[in-house]
Amino acid sequence: DYVESPEWEDTDEYSWRFRSPSRLMVGAAVTIAKRFIISADYERSWYQSTRLTSSPINNLDYRATMKEQFRGSNTVRVGAEVRALPFMDIRAGYIFSDGGIRNSNQIFTHPLVTRENYITAGLGFKLGATTYLDFAYQYNKRERTFYQSFYATDSFDPELNIEAVPVRTNSYRHLAVLTLGFRF
Image 1 (cartoon, rainbow, N blue to C red):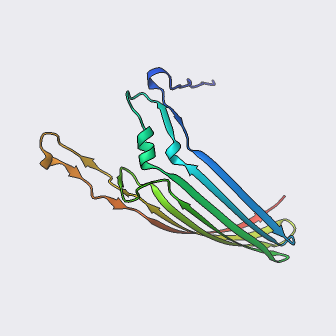
Image 2 (cartoon, rainbow, N blue to C red):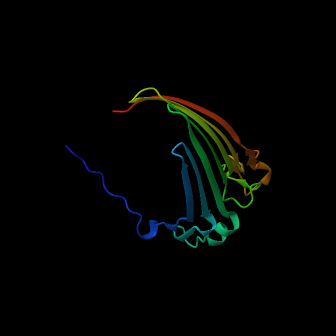
Image 3 (cartoon, one colour):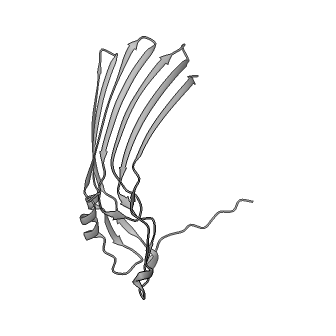
């Protein structure tokens, strides 16, 4: 038997309604002599324009908080690929993104990305009419805000307050992928 689950809706006093950030994206690419490709993209997100227009919590107004805590974010992507030999392509790219957080030294309840960089490279080989081998490499550096994973307060005795030490967990990641593909 087929059983259909009920549809859940956020309505009445349990309703949330918000407007996501405005975004602008622009990109361009050019091919030169059918052997060389250069591309660039720019993206702007206005995180401070996020609006919460209704929520199940009475008198909740995030408008001032959004403007105070967030700002516009920029992302730039550039890349190039060249057909070095009839059977081999070489490519490289770079991505930079600054986060939409106004004060990256503020302490949050969870880590938020403040800045991110990617460096990419790759080699592609055409092994036959329908077979290819591709190697891709990516280096990623991600910077985050300070965050505090736990805190508890005792309103009767402040001596019993418990707080975790604020930490910042930046990450550095290398990723390599080798792909053997068959087109059919």
